[in-house]
Image: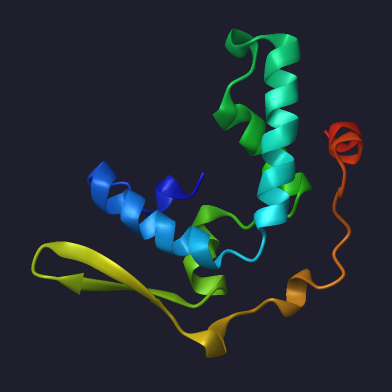
Length: 117
């Protein structure tokens, strides 16, 4: 989903940056729930009948998962560059805006998420 943040990078470079983001992502529980429900839906409907991209397009707004174009800014991530291009991410802790997500009303179980879809 967030690979869209680095469309012009080689997979190896983008993967390293995404690993950094994932290690600090405050919403891992949301992603675990999304993954469980996707696996269930895929197994029930068949892999050819549900694409991951389409599922995420529907599910992520329901779960209030931050859109890729907003992610770096909301979490205060700054891409650092060297002579070869993007090489690292650093986070400005003062710029993290998590207040918006406190007390949010999103599905918390597999059944809640399935009903919301």
